[in-house]
Image (cartoon, rainbow, N blue to C red):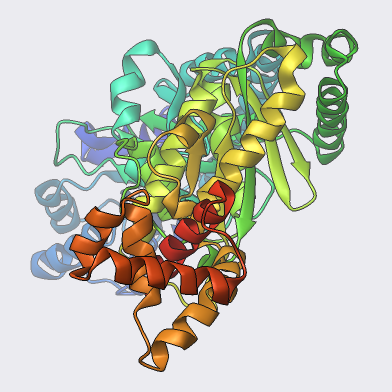
Length: 553
């Protein structure tokens, strides 16, 4: 505790006596200041014990003393020390009365007690309080370190909550609550998600204070601190207390920030080592060596290979390559996915990595993430949190982008292909499935396609490829050039004949011509193209070419 007026009064060497304000002696004293100015208020900061001899005051004028004392109290002066035996043998009654009316503690300083002794006593008490705070802070740091080593983040939060006599919560990169202490603080912490998201938008390290105004039911004061050493914070810490933190509590919070940063943000060398292990495991699985892969994976990824998993391949492509399809999936993204999709600046693959790893960490499941040149490869448990988070994030991105007009200068977009559930012996096939789904995602104008969806819908959207259109244009160009001369509608006749599966009467009726006229036109098609319509492959190519050119019109 800092020094108070009461502790100074009880100081045996000072011999101070209380003449007014006996009920306000428990107020902390920030400093002892000597001033004989008639108006020392401009030089006060608040919390001072003002020491005077009334050298320039008319201390016997009641009105002057009321104004003087009122200004001191308004400036935050916590007490007034009056030296007797210097200019006055005793404290004038006008000053005593004014101090009593204003409720300002008035201390009588005997002649043998110099002001310097009072200043030294205050200074020594402040230094002793700071030393106690530092000592308590170091003790808290040792306890927090012990808990971090033995109990992980949960144990550290419990120790921190005890140190600050409040509660503490840890959030992941998406703003979701990871752990709280005590348990009852979970609901309070969950209501701060929006504040945590705003904190993430600021460069690290960042902090903010929420609440503590006394205007709501949640009357605690909450400090939010970002955790991490990179440009973007990886997590956040919330500390809730009934009042502002003291020096010892502040030491404890700063120690917790440092320890949680070490706990939640692994070193770059460790991350690189884990990525190398993950890449080796993936190469062995692709080479058909699941047992060797399991041995290398060990405890890090071994559990992932014990149950069906999905292989995810993601790429960042130019915005113009991704046309948001009108028949995009109707999956409803979570609030966390929508929040992550709203922050779409930067590398989309890095953002997806953060989403997947955060979801896996919250659920306690293993996930293998391997950057591979210009793409990202992920192995995640089928039906697990990581796969779900990936799908919801992609759908949220589609929802965010569907109403926007992309321009050539826009950043790259995310495209994701997902395999069917497989085991360790079928990873090579799963990789092909994911690549096929990725290719279809680009062609269909989607950001996320699962392999099971490839057989659904129509094959016609796949004809939107530029190479397919170029082939179709080249194949049908002679017919279009013939029709342009006005010598017959060969393209329309071919389309009608193919749509009627070669039935002459039905196709001729659709065109409104005689069947002999249609037969003549089909012979002309064969002559111009140099192909036989009796060949089923030719009929298939012509039909697809007609569909491809029709979709481009």
